[in-house]
Image (cartoon, rainbow, N blue to C red; front, side):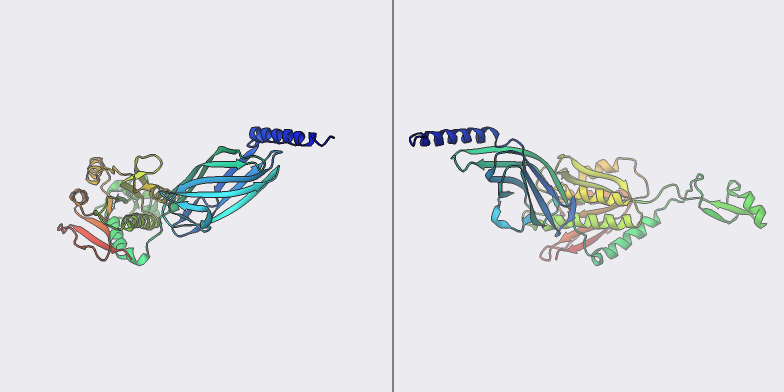
Length: 374
């Protein structure tokens, strides 16, 4: 080949390579992000796995993968992270043709919440061209960070007081369709309750025992209103932690628990509520609902209005309310008084810092429990 043709051939090869890269660089290129744990608890450590696959005959010498998630996740390797109102992560990969690369990023879950990654941005460049190419890949990656449980010694006394009230609210009426056992006849028993077969066998009158018509329930009323202009946001997190701790303790005692809160769901934007339940699955549902409360959403529903709406429903007489609120503003106090007027008394769990005024309400029907934030 004549020497003067070599530059022409090289230039044509450069144009061909540039055209091929521009047209086909993202064909067969996939990015998959997955948290290794679906759910963790505040303070736990976990991993985020990145899987980059290049099913293409074109190598990608420089590929930047960028994604964002909410603050609250602390990536161990901070060299590729920047934090503003979001956490921005930028990773650089180099892939040969038909190659898959897997990388794991370790992180600590410092804050309760619901974290998801909806999209990754890709930036690729060719070694032989100044062109920069952009693409995106949709993701469906999510993880719950559940609120941590508060120490048992902090809730032992109020929990035992609540359990005493819950147990005392059993109905005296019995369900004739359920059978619990047999006992000796008493003059006050109905003739319809006599078990004639058992009486014939023992030679004395015996009556059937029946279960109660319904079981006691607890509704946790969680108020996330701010206690003042300047306050520690951890007080609101403590309210959520106490709600979860009490809910789990009641469920472990087979007491159904429901949730009423003016907190809004981070995903749907709707006010969160949960019907009563007492299964282990309900503990998970409770934890997920609390994890998804968005404290910065604004426009929270008035707690007293929410309580008024709740009390207007025809609820079981065995329902006991547990009120949790660090706010002692008028709306919070009005909500507590409405609950007290309905049931005659109320327990109010109030997280406070040591520097805050510890004064409760003047209503002696309300048991005001101060929980000092450590």
